[in-house]
Image (cartoon, rainbow, N blue to C red):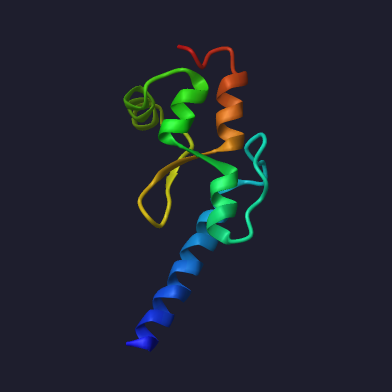
Length: 99
C-alpha cells in the first residue's frame, strides 16, 4: 500500500513538472512564485473563471473561444483548464482579440 502511495506521489510530481513546462516563466501580477510545482503552475496560469474575468467575458464564452479558435490552454493533472499568463496578456494586447 505504501509503495503505491509513493508511486502516485512520483507520478503526480512528474505530471505537475510536465505541466509547468507549458506555463512559461511569466507570473500573474501580484503573485509570488510557489514553493511547490503545483503552486508554480498556479502562479503562471489563470483558471477559466479568472481568465474570463480578466478579459471581461463569461467563462462559457471563453471556453467556446478556446475550442473554436484553438487558444493556448491546457488541462492540468487535476482536470482544471488553464491559460498561461503570457497567452492571456497576448490576447489582451492584440487589438483583434475582441472580435
